[in-house]
Length: 349
Image (cartoon, rainbow, N blue to C red; front, side):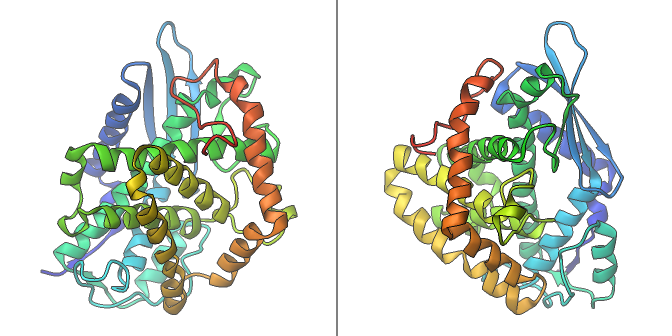
């Protein structure tokens, strides 16, 4: 069987209803009935996500607006990347690898036009299941990230200091280091939640393709998901501190580093026997960019510039400013937080 993928799947009524069910499931999994969350899907081709508090009596009510273009570009980027069988070798077949100039585009429509000029690429059923699994992991990370902005007290804190709401990609009235600090908090918490769910909830294995139902493949899938989200979506890659200091989120490599470090700290505390395997998988999966470079769909010079700056003394100083700043934020957020925040700097982040 050969399947031609189409991102129209994600704008179908059934798909959007499924997305809203995922949101509801994750809210109840993480928070029970602590608050009500209303989700709204827009279609403005701007990849934007915004959160606001709504007037309410008793239980707090929040609304999240997701732009459908974010889902479409995510779906298509995974289609392009996974068309290369060097990723997840032995899991399904692709009729070929996409050849397009770049996946770094300001709008989904541009990527869609580039794909239309490529010869049709077909997946077999197993490869399509892999695509859908990674796509679902990406969705879960995005949704958990936004829910954590609420559950970790960020939204209520902003409302309390007279901010109208929260929009991803903006500093929301904070300075850049403060904005990057709270983003680090939610990324770290989501990374730990991902690994904890995979490793302690046996039912989650039933949602994973059978060839990936082993610990190393779970780690590989998790780290692959982070690279797609942090490097392949409209990304924040830098080569000097002046660029890093104007971002709302940490730059791509630091986001990846914070998430990996949070996951490693969790394993060292609760699953120490898996820490070495996680570290080895982390090292192995940097081949992601060698494969991407060969496929010529991403400017890997920017990736390595971002990586090299992040590992430089200047980059590490910037990373430590964010880490150290987190200690100042913990007491500000605790009165509003429903779930446990990331640990203090120096305590195993």
